[in-house]
Image (cartoon, rainbow, N blue to C red):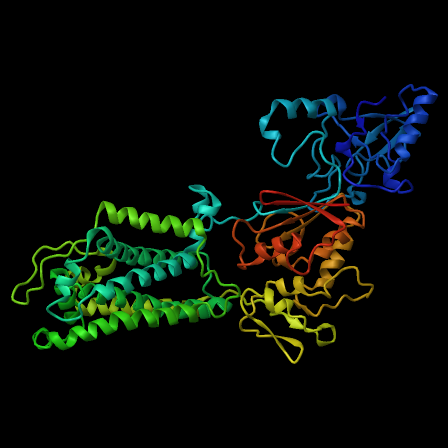
Length: 598
């Protein structure tokens, strides 16, 4: 028997029909080997089986570069690409064939040696030996012998993974990564500040003469700890907001349909610092005196007139410290108005970790008041909060005018930044009223609140649309099993239609493996704008039309369109419409979802 052909489970990437010409391929050198009639009959039965497909184990040495074959060899003998034999007497030598007849898998490069993407064939014994000796080969998704059933894999790890998006994954597990939940942590810190501030306000004396003493009389084991938590939570709020701003800037999430969220977040920085600085004044110690005088100098207000009106101003300070956070909360609500399913609730592990960290810091280094406010003296040496009061030393190091120029210039730059981008805008999704039944799935799944239902029909707001295609993947009419020649969905992308997706899928079938990949991911495959643009029915369609396995490749640990990976996970897990049909068996391993026909 020819050693260069093996009929193992590894060499059967897809199911072939007995009458298919691809199922009747044999080795070019098989006829030159002496065989008995019984072995020939057994080989014929094996070749006619729909589960048999040979794989040529070509050697890399020079001796195997020119295999011998007989004159009766067919032109259909091709290990990976077309291989033809030229008769030379009673035997022939395999010649370099034309690559025009090569049928390579998607992404392969045709050559006379074979497809560039075709793996080097290894014998069954060598595979078993390497699998048993190499622990790396025994991954969580690999078993011996390899599975040959049709499978669907949702891979969240393959694809483009920018460094700044996944920086936290390099130092901590994914569920503990704080960089992916900075916005939610900001909300948690706000509510923590509100809860601790309510207790402090109850114990606080709002008069000018009793403010300092009421803070000083707080019991250390509860009131003092809450005061420290309140102070450190404000500093953590500043750090989280700054990190959130820088991360969104580096990720480019400030232009186009994201411009509203970016611009609405710029005033929140002013409100955050305003609330923190006024809260420093309420302690009425030397630190508050320094901050108050520096603020008046920055605003070019006379200090003497303010000193004479301290009694009337102190009540106004209390009102500001209560009113500005309410404006901040209203701004935070506006900030997420154009986001579907906004992440305003921090994960329990991260919220608990943040709270415990603040509590530990408060116990190690509790916050203490400075000396009492004395308008007759000027503070000389103070331990200030550099995260909240850094503007005061900066003003004294430069000038009030320079500080105004830096603050207003930075604010103006952040405001106009979305309009300075020249990135081309994608074509928004469009609705076909004849195929829209007003089910509302596109409204529920849109990550940017760009779709609404009016009078039983969906309407797309073009200025909010991200052209991600998630709405097309949610539409019940986006199924490839429809018999219509032109597949028209109720809502679709004009430049990347569901009909075009079905046409490309049909062009790839029958194939051993079909790959759907997000545009953000690298590698071969049928590209979609987002992994959630792929309707689950396309998976079953590919499996029932000749594909032995299907893969969908996401864009990494964090979706470029916020909810793409989460929505795909819910659809494939049958927890959200459109669901994967029960005819497909589901198996989950970490972030990998395997599906097989029942």
